[in-house]
Amino acid sequence: MDMRALYDRLKALYPLGELTEQRANLAFVTLPAEYLRPALLHLRDLEGYRHLVLLTAVDWLEDGLFQLTYLLCNRSRNCDIGLRVMLPREGATMASSHDIWPTAAVYQRELREMFGIDFPDSPGVDEEFILEGWNDIPPYRRDFDTLKYANDSFAQRAGRETRDPETHMKQQLYPDRD
Amino acid sequence: MAYTPDRSQYPAMKADGSLDIDLASGKYLKLWQGPNHPGITGNMSVELTVCGDEVVAGKTHVGYLHRGFEKLMERRTFIQCFPIVCRICVPEPDFNEYCYAAAVEELAGIEVPEKANWIRALILEMGRINSYLMYLGGQAGALGQGVIGQWTTYARDLMLDRFEELTGARIYHMFIMPGGVRDHLPEGFQGRMQETLKEVECTLKDVWEVMFCNAVFKRRTVGMCVIDPAWLDEYGVTGPNARAAGVAKDVRRDAPYLVYPELDFEPVTGHDSDIYTRADVRRRDLLMSVDLIRQILARMPKDGPIMAPMPSMLHWRIPRGETYVRGECSRGEYGYYLVTDGSGYPRRVNVRGPSYTHAMSLLERMIVNVNISDVASLMVSLHTYPPEIER
Image 1: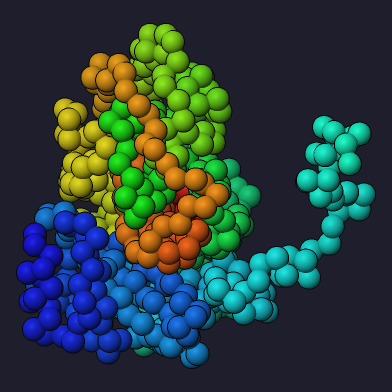
Image 2: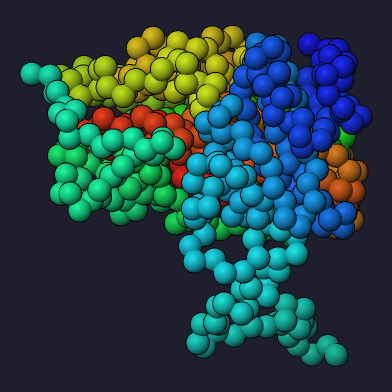
């Protein structure tokens, strides 16, 4: 399928951003959050994009934005389209799409926990997914410091020695050299 | 005599669709299957609500093996990510290596040499055989046939020997790296692989006779836990779970990659979509992989490079972009969504494993009305690996 032709059909209905054609059968396009659900329904029901491949987020910390990516597949035509929605990082909220694909509820639950993006009315969205008793900022955000968290949360095992690799190897290989 | 549930004992449904389960009534019991249970598929658990010996609700819990791979990769250079991606899936790690490498190559504009693609396909089919052998042992074991697992472990061990001589490792191979593969086939590898394939076929013949023709196995799997073909799109069902429902979903044919367009094969399908059919589809798919390996060995170029010219790994930056690369692993569609920002590190890596949907929303849907004794069999029949869920 010509991704450009699909883009033109969608563009006539929704205010889309520029088309990014990654491959002949894979393209990405950005659209405003309020048009996402109609676009998903259109692609599923009228264009044959019935398979929700994945739903995930990208943290553009410098721009203060989260990017939500809904990747849909039209298996019979071997085509994929990724719908991108940009959300402000502060109080990021998106309409749930669990009624379009039941499996979206799991993705949304994970995004709530890992990025702090809310999907009101999504089943079980506030339940813990992977983390238990988490009391820090959502860990997949770019400003979450994994090293600091590890140092604050876990103690070194007693008796464990830490060596600077450069100094250690120098002592092992060239002990006489300054 | 067929089992007939007592519907009068079932919980009422609330307005929001959830079940009104009053544990104090004494009608219901919470039962945890896992995380430590012989009938669990790895590091996960299912919180069952049972009425008598029938499940009225089930909830999948994961997080026992979360290592934050996707987050770790954002702090590592592209080449530093390569040795850790395989650890996302123990029984079939090679798809992580392939999908990650292919995504990086696409965004970096690297053309992989032809022979490397043949060796990659060989590795992926070898991994598929291993994964199916492990599955067959688990499926039989869930129904009390412990000996099948011993036989398939023997055959898998032979294939691990081939992995060891090819890659130097038995489980995590770290062989498919961005740009190509690490090495050529060792001297005499083809002959030893042919011997291993014969032994795998021989084991499969025994498995057919003792497992698939067994009256108890048939009784407990035929007609059990059917996946409605209408659910395939709703729940993102792929791989043998979809093919057993009569839908020939197979990335190797639908979106050909590597050398699959040059190989002669047809996706294995079934019709009944029950546990027995899913097991049989996997058994036949395994035999197809044996055939594919023979085709690959016969047609693989004898000479040629196996690595593309690569930039300095220490100063390697990839232009801003995003892509998604998929492959057909033993459990269905496996894919990597990679976003780059022009730096030397991935901006975002998202792993799409088939277990994400199969073990969560699909299992929770299918587990209702299942007898407790069949829960393990159902879970194994979906062939899920929890680390794909929690990455």
